[in-house]
Amino acid sequence: KKMVLSCCAVGCANRFQKAKGVGFYRFPAFPNSRRQKWIQAIKRERWIPSKNSRVCGAHFVTGKPVNRAGHIDYVPSLFTFTRRVDEVLMRLRLNLRVEDLSYRFSISLSTVSDIFQRWIDLLFTHLSFLIHWPSQEIVHNNMPQIFKDLYPRTRCIIDCSEVFIERPCAYQARAKTYSNYKKHNTIKFLIGITPNGAISFLSKCWGGRATDKCITKNSGFLDLVEHGDVILADRGFDIADDLGVYGARLEIPSFTRGKNQLSLQEVEYSKRLSKVRIHVERVIGLLKNKYTFLQSTLPVNLLRHRSDSEYANIDKIITVCAAITNLSPSVVPL
Image (cartoon, rainbow, N blue to C red; front, top):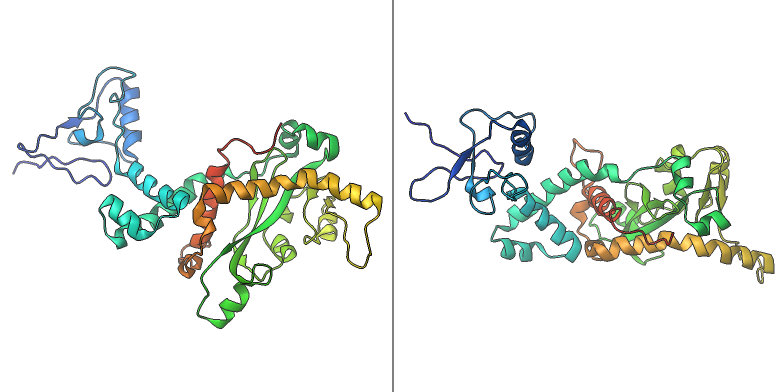
């Protein structure tokens, strides 16, 4: 019985039909560098093409491969996974509803949800490395002038941010996620940036009721701090003693509690600190403005996580958004 030729690209259902007009092409044998690029483009793990493996013309801009290095069709480039990434990023960037994406891409609602879930998992796995805690030397070598002048030992600027969620049905979950500050049910996460504006730390999400101090102490952030580090934060981060254990120092604005007014020295100190601490708020603003999905009221089902993962879906979503934000130009002037 004659073998039916089918395309080996992931997600492609094209099979050879004489009347269809779509060509099927063997993997090039020479040069080997071109063959390896074809294999990489297919993105199948630990897979080696056989003599019967074919790539159909749907994955070439002109409909067929071109044997000229530098041409766009020297290597196949059109795949469904590029379209899938577009669907995910459109939802994150534009906060499009599932119904909208279903209509735009002519797929069912369940398929949209399934694609979003699977590709968030994939992007989380492959992009998490972009959120990196750099060494003291790297931080110092890339420090903007304003930090060198005011706080030359700065390692990180931290703050917490909240995102609205729907009100959970369970009373305990409702209580844990209610934010007295926002007067709404929220999730809350700790974000840390380097002096040059790169996101270097991102915690898992907590219920909006959790305090800044509680999240910081239980997020793993303190384990990254080293002797001599200076951490800049807002008043809610009462963690000076916790940082002191690691030989680090906390810089926060002066407290007004119990005082009629701040002294001139305290006012000047707080103004000087605010000049540099504001950059973490600018980064958070950039993150939420680029990915308007985080400005909406998120469904409660995003707080769940599968039994085989320690991360909830919302943890993965925020990590993906933060990782890609790190590819943007810095908001901190050098």
